[in-house]
Length: 138
Image (cartoon, rainbow, N blue to C red; front, side, top):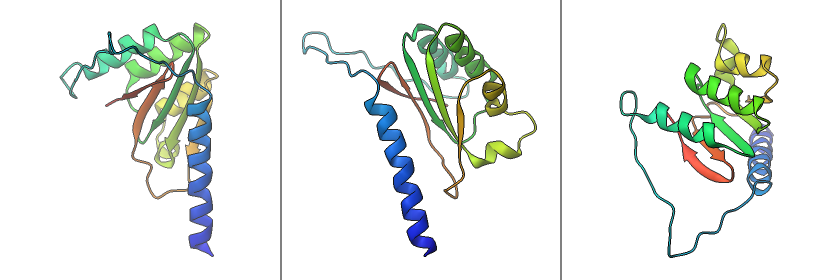
């Protein structure tokens, strides 16, 4: 019975993520000008700065799924986007509940919807969808 419960919970999370993805606009690019791709590394390879630059340009939506969210600069950039009227939704791992004052607490206290994935042993993803485009972050 527990296996069935886990499968049901996993399917529910997948459905929520799919609904979040499907509710964002999809961009179609012509073959004449494909989108550029850049690679950054962490912790000292410019990754955090690149993520913040993208968050600062966001116009409509930011969807976040992360395991441990400890970057104060990225949390502040999310707050700035929220203040500009960008719709933000965050799903974090249950480990965020035990930290004294995590980015999850900060975002929640600022009125940004934060959901905790307590159904899985570990939700070790770090993904953002910004204005309908995928971005992986540190």
